[in-house]
Length: 259
Image 1 (cartoon, rainbow, N blue to C red):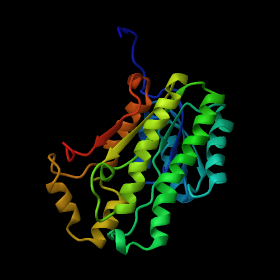
Image 2 (cartoon, one colour):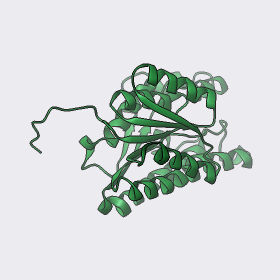
Image 3 (cartoon, one colour):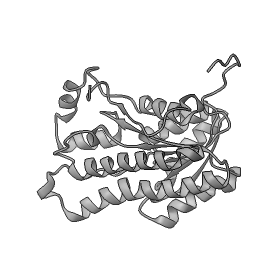
Image 4 (cartoon, rainbow, N blue to C red):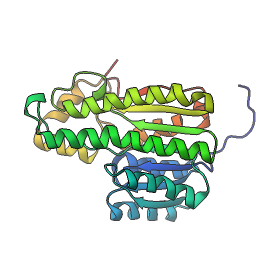
């Protein structure tokens, strides 16, 4: 492609929904997407966190709104997508980032309630969001892009977090299936698979399994945990028109852990 026009932001004027946007990778994505020109709609369960991020984005000159959303509630998920369309008249893109981690436990020791939560939020919640987002993109923008947040733990055995890893592996399959189904309509669907990131989820894991961060970093060629912004950058590119020929990809953002 030979394009000599000046480049604008990665996501200029794209109406973009972000789930799990109150903290961690989701909040970092909301800030970054807004800096790159997107009109962002933030969704999560904790309104105080959402308001804080929205206020920060608006203070920096960005366009941001929020809606309280529980991925375990189908009506809530559809309502979040409807809010984005109501506010801006269309939906161009979505970053399905929200997730829930299980307690550290092997397969046979994991309580059923914790298994159900991991599968409901990480897998079913992503499916619910994708279904609503695809319908909205088709009805309004016509074409667009979706990125799901998976995990490097979906790409290998995950003995300490087996239900989480399995649910995220299911997200990878869902991503690939949707990419094939909706590619002919101009809707791209990809995923990122973050490795070790400095988030509340990682801090919780370290508290339950002291030393786990050092172990993970020792398995990572770059030798460190990533900042949330580093996965946000990968998601922004995949959502943007600069990734116009990329779909059906599960992109590791893992410092080389899977190399």
